[in-house]
Image (cartoon, rainbow, N blue to C red; front, side, top):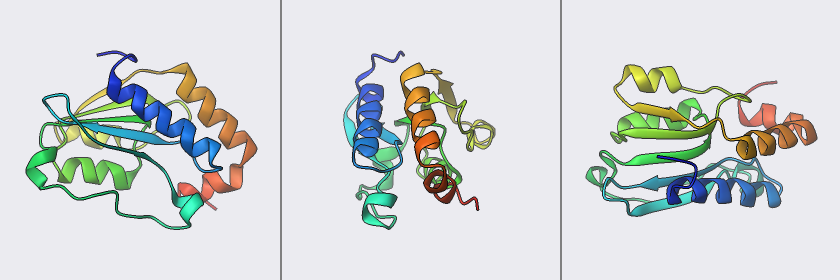
Length: 141
């Protein structure tokens, strides 16, 4: 497993797309246990001014899958990973923000952190440019 994995590359591409749209640069890609990309996307809360449903598959489709994400998952995403029995979460970086990694581990999910400089740089740039939007996104004042 490396930063050259298709799932991780897709998550980073999604993070870049979010940033280029003026939103929070967090991207993700869900890959089944057989390597099929089940879905990919990025944080759209700023662009669409809402949280939205990203799709629907039967719960069994997610079991044992790998979630690639450019940033440590927030509590909401952590909960979704646990609820749908995602087996592994691969994180681009967790230096700018640490989400529910420990809880994932406690619940038996494998957590891998790449400490990818591209992901870190993108988040640092965004946090510097739009600190109020970032704080809003993580529920801070």
